[in-house]
Image (tube, rainbow, N blue to C red):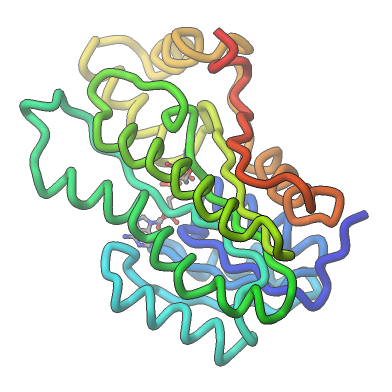
Length: 258
Ligand code: NAD
């Protein structure tokens, strides 16, 4: 069993969905976890405090580089730095390119792509100095293939995989690895909103919209779960994964095999 006792994992956007699932799995394997994100912070904290490690929280808005710098200073001063950095915070906006509001484009790129650059740029020296580190970027199937009306998200996620590969090469002869995880559909608030919008737009039930959404892209017709993604992040954090470098690892029910 992978033992992360003594390691600190910073998971951005970990107050709900995939980030919270990853935080729970890493905490269950002994890591200290630093949570970040908005919404029901208390419930998120409570769901990880039952494990052995310490739990921290910082409410940085990841669209703001100065707040990211403050988050990284907090992890450094309270926990001695992030050994495992999971760049997970993300938002979605759906519109055709010609209708895409420029401020929504900027927000999607800032949170889904630039934030990972800023956390990485501020975490790498500490990881290298300690001789060990794991950077795990939560991309998407949309980092590998596109869907209509998601230009900013697709651009950000393709960019995140490019960033992952470049950093992995720069770090190739160190104890620090950098990889991306590419989930297919996961039933989280981010996707529940898309299902609700789809049901409203087409006048079908939420149950039918859920089935349609899944079958259109994901051959398994089942959602990936935050727990399964947490277990993959745990593997990438293990010593068995020391030579997994620059990978974009799909967990997508067969979406990108088509
Ligand atoms: P979610 O909406 O449940 O969670 C998003 C998290 O990010 C929340 O904790 C939220 O508070 C936080 N967040 C949003 N904006 C932020 C900001 N400006 N600063 C700090 N935190 C912020 O979404 P999710 O589905 O769990 O998505 C998590 C990641 O997984 C995203 O990067 C998303 O693109 C990716 N992803 C999701 C799916 C899916 O099907 N749900 C599939 C592929 C990839």
